[in-house]
Length: 99
Image 1 (cartoon, rainbow, N blue to C red):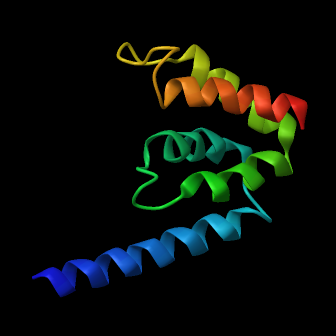
Image 2 (cartoon, rainbow, N blue to C red; image 1 turned 120 degrees about the horizontal axis):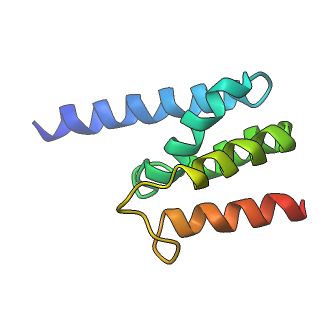
C-alpha cells in the first residue's frame, strides 16, 4: 500500500544520507568509482546524492579526479558526451579541477 511505500522510501533516504555523510570523513579511494556511479545514476529526483558525493570527492581531490578520469575512459557504449549524466561527469571533472 501507499503508506508502506512512503515509509520505505523515507527509511532508505535516511540510510543513504547517513551513509554518504559518514564517508565525508573516511572513504577508501577504492570506493570512489562506486560513488561516482551513485552520483551519475541514482535519480536526483529521488534523493540529491550529488550534494553528498561532492564533499567526498573534494576530501582527496587528486584521487577523486583520478576516479573520474578512469570512469570517463570506461564510458559505456550508450553514454555520450552531450547527454546527462555523462556530460555532467565531464562538467564535474572540470569543476573539481578549478576548486
